[in-house]
Amino acid sequence: MSSSRLWAPWRMEYVGDQGPKPACIFCELPESGDPKGSLVLSAQEHFVVMLNRFPYNNGHLMVAPRQHTANLMDLSEGGYTALMAELRRCCSVVREVLSPDGMNVGINLGAVAGAGIADHLHWHIVPRWNGDTNFMPVLGETRVMPQHLEASWEMFQSHF
Image 1 (cartoon, one colour):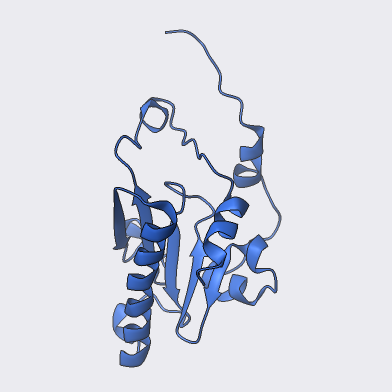
Image 2 (cartoon, rainbow, N blue to C red):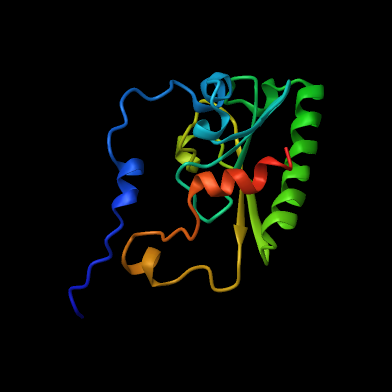
């Protein structure tokens, strides 16, 4: 095997220290006043929709309740209903904007279940295409994203 390197200096913004981090991205970023910089697509009474800053695939969205809770049963009936309606609508938007072959849609309840932010419920919508997994994440432990997050935000923004 050759000792090739893939240089991706723009990735430093994701792995480097960017200073203080928000206590909860789902609570603080919608209030930042900078939706594009915060990757927030929509912040409504019962939910927030944002792009994942560390996506599994291009167009990876997260939908979270505005209520800060890790317990699904803490959501009010109205809040839960609005959240689920938005989750369904976001799947339609992803299909319209990106035309994926499929999607992974899910929630990880608790750190042991894989939740990176275990204190605030959030659903992931990950567009998938036939052949979207290649040798990079398998052997190189690196994902190659074909589009910058700001360009993704621009594509989605008109739908929110």
